Length: 227
Image: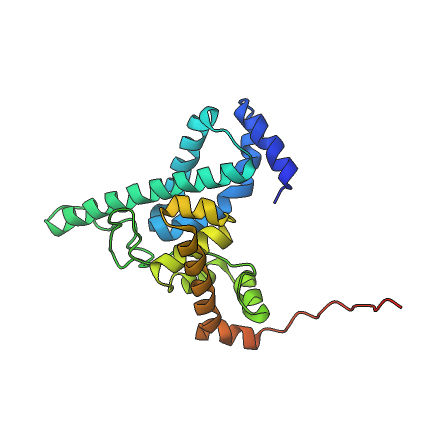
């Protein structure tokens, strides 16, 4: 991940039309965007991610702000695109149920949302990603952080919808409480509570606890007392 000043330089260059600057932003942020969209848009995640970046490139000249603001802006676009995909998938399922020829919705492959569709922009199922730290105990945090992405996503996906999306945007996307609240249309206090509860549920997850017990603990760094 580039440093903040490198991202700031890349953002400035991208806004001036420099393709290399935009490429730096893409390499830095697309992995988290894709994790988010895998649970929002299922098998269509890569296509929706492409739509997200195309819109970002098209509208970048109207964006003002620093890299943190760009990150929040990008995930707002991704969420809106994900909602659009959920609605399209719902229409395809309705077409299939009425005798149409379509043989699978965008979300059916992963099974995360059990075929349900976003209503009013509210997630019916969980979203998540690879956690790093947060309120998890050290061993459990190491397990989630070091686990393969699919497994880590599956554990966060078991959280209630509000907790899972708060965890995703706060921990995985790296957004602050204010930006997360704006994206979700919630109060800051509600975002804090949802994130805390989600992390606590992860810490109590039997599969996470089992992996934590099986995983060798990282040695603590030695400290030298000053005389």
